Length: 469
Image 1: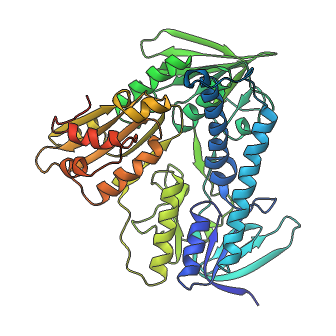
Image 2 (image 1 turned 180 degrees about the horizontal axis):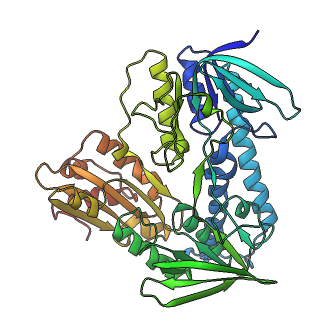
Image 3 (image 1 turned 90 degrees about the vertical axis):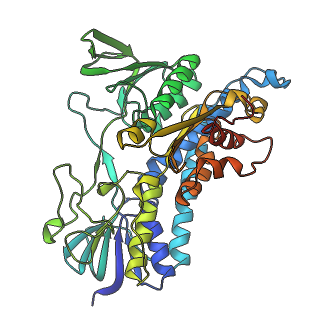
């Protein structure tokens, strides 16, 4: 007799496992299915994305800081790094994180199936195991949380050696002497930051007219300036159309926005563009679930598909593909299933965080989008070069920029590039969720000396009342 569950979640990433825990907390009988062969939980974020990438970024950050120790009066011997140990620590962090997810499943009495999940029909899910055997379980509800995978780019096929994607580059045995990075989104600029700080000659190529193109234009300009100071070259408005692998290098060529030929050669090419939802073999054809022309599952504001009792969250739907959003989507779904009153997620308040050097973080509207939406915009901006704490830690590149509207003084967007930007953003997320005004944010007492004072000063700057500038 098939085992019965209130909800079965296919995929154990930050959307799936968080939904499983909250579902169990709500008193639901929960199952989670994960196809990872070694039974590790955590999904792309935990195993091949957020967590391992940030572990490498931390090592790179410390190595770069150590190269400036003498400025702080600290003398060290010849500075060097052990790449094998860097990779080992990254693997240890990943393993502990994954083990933590497994512990959460056990603690919350979530049944874990280490196999491949397929919807046979509404209410029935098949689990196929590597050994070839199968189980069928009954479930009142199913949540598709299978995430995304790297999308192949025609003409720029990866081999895991000379031409790599975001999965391959996490496992490099050595730091290459030179690298061309195709794409300046979060993946591209984060890996550019890692390898440049370990001595790799890095060139970032972006199709659009600026790096980190989803961010505020001022942030893009600042990141490009900071990268230039670090020796990272940025070529924007460039469309690469050919790639040629040589014995010890890779050549790419194309044209810039003015039609000028561009040719580059490096030891390694990182293709840091293109991901697609992972929906293969899930049995969606056995349901009324609709997939649009972009390959994403169609859902309403409560993540409900066209098939009653089947939901989809995270990278398989048309919301920002961010781990923290997937988690909140999963929580919303299971709380609704448990009978709680829930509100749709405000997608205008989803934080963006990029862990390059300097860090980039934002929430809400850019200046350009606020103006396009018809707001009468007022800007407040405060540079970290005027922050006492930023001078103390030796990280003064960047600024906080606040976009507000004149009529009601409401904060519409906060954009940060600089030290601890991804941590500082939390204050802005809370403030905007409470519909703060720039005046209110500027009047909140911020501890001194902290880099968070820059948020307060930028808010005061909306009314031209900044003190330390």
